[in-house]
Each structure stands twice: as C-alpha cells, then as structure tokens.
Picture 1 (cartoon, rainbow, N blue to C red):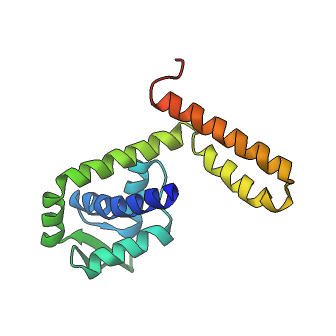
Picture 2: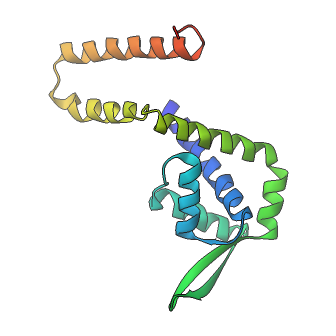
Length: 158
C-alpha cells in the first residue's frame, strides 16, 4: 500500500519534473533523463521515463522535432505553450516534485537505499524460511519501523 502510493506520487512528479527540465530548454530524451538523474540522484529507467515522455507529447504538453546531429536523425523535445501553462498553473506541485526529487537524491546518497536491497533479499528468501525465521523477521521489521519513526519524529539520539 505504502509503496504503491509512493510510486503514484513519483509518477506524477516525473511528469512535472520532465516538463520542468524542458523549461530549461530543448533537449533529446537521454539529455532529459540525465538532468532528471542529476536532480533525483539516480537516472530513471527508460521503462519509467519513456511512457511519461510519450504521454506528455500525446497530450500536447511537449513537442518533438527530428533534427540532424552528427549525421544522424535525433528527436529533440521542447516544452509547448500548453506545457508552459501547466507548469505555471501547477507551480506548487512542481516545487513539491522538486522537493521529492531532492529527497530521493539525499536518500540515495546517504546509502539509505540499501533498505530496498534488504527487502528484495527477504522476498527472494521467503520460500525457504521456517516459520520461526519469518517470525524473527517480522519482529525485526517492527523494531526497525519503530526505531525509524522515532528518529524521523525527532526522538532519536543525535
């Protein structure tokens, strides 16, 4: 439940962030992905990015033009007037999206993304664990959750 809410929030943020990156000037898809990576601390996968970009083009918020660069055809994306209007009318949400992106970057740079690898390890191991091991994991996760929330809410030492 929590993760799907974060995913939905991230997807919405990705649309606004892509528009924001294109407000800095026209760019090719990889250039936009690279800029997103600089802001978020990780480059989005093409599987996450391209559906967002295509949706923005389909909805008329981004325009695409093929140009020749170094002897080959390259698609260059630019913010349309409609995209500019969306950015203007959703200024607060854009700021929220930028805050979320900076949080992702700090989370990643702090090494805290290790928690995702631990969750993957737990999921992959579940089939071979005894009931006792599963119960120990459940207790460890509850202790972890309690401690993390305590730190976030200012009750942790340091």
